[in-house]
Image (spheres, helix red, strand yellow):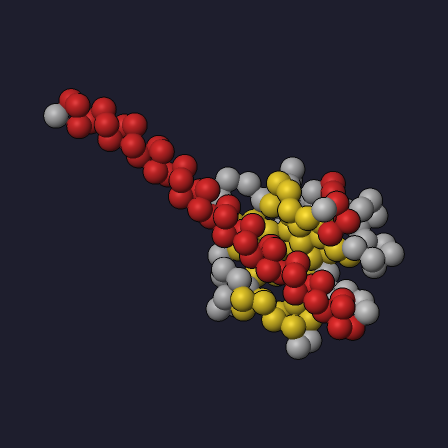
Length: 132
């Protein structure tokens, strides 16, 4: 019995950590999809969508702009921001079950971990519309 208890004490934290990493992988995948759709929209219209807000997907579908929807996980909250010149964008994604927020900054080469993110309060420094 003691051996089984020791093995369980080792295995359970490892399992929980792997679940969090799975949630992170979902956020990163959805951010790449979101960014790809924004780049396509820019290619088609010559501009990025102007709407900047924190958004939760409804039923796994996120409306980015009129006529532009993206299939994403419904458990992720996204933030979309444009820089002042409207030539670059930042998309932030967070899943409360993951290990950290993630951001995709088009002018900085793409996906990276976000330092801070709380919807509607503070933005990661890299996503601040006045600095990127």
